[in-house]
Image 1 (cartoon, rainbow, N blue to C red):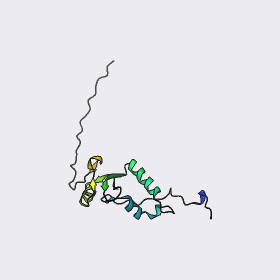
Image 2 (cartoon, one colour; image 1 turned 45 degrees about the horizontal axis):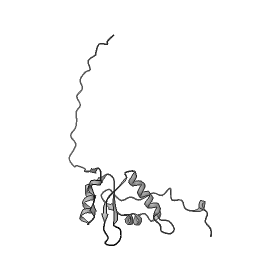
Image 3 (cartoon, helix red, strand yellow; image 1 turned 90 degrees about the horizontal axis):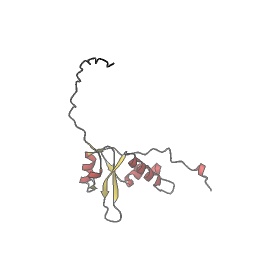
Image 4 (cartoon, one colour; image 1 turned 135 degrees about the horizontal axis):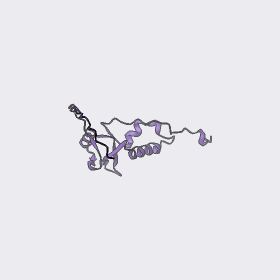
Length: 130
């Protein structure tokens, strides 16, 4: 059976299920949570292109690499803004985190923000110069 280009399933309208902001992930974990993004031959090229686009749009950040002992190390990602909890989890799991390349790191404080009361002063009229 010959399938024409117009009869193939179009992957442009697919939505990626991104992990939460407190977790880090690899491309393998992203493939496991998004099986609908794989092609009929189980290729993940569409998912890799979407991940690359998300990195360039500052939606996802690369935080380090995970050495598996053989071959290339796996790159580790997290959602932007990068939270300290995801970096701490990655560090405790033995992932070499590259902190200086991650900008900015966001910390959320549990303390309330101080309120600012603006003061208004009347504007004096300035005589016009003729």
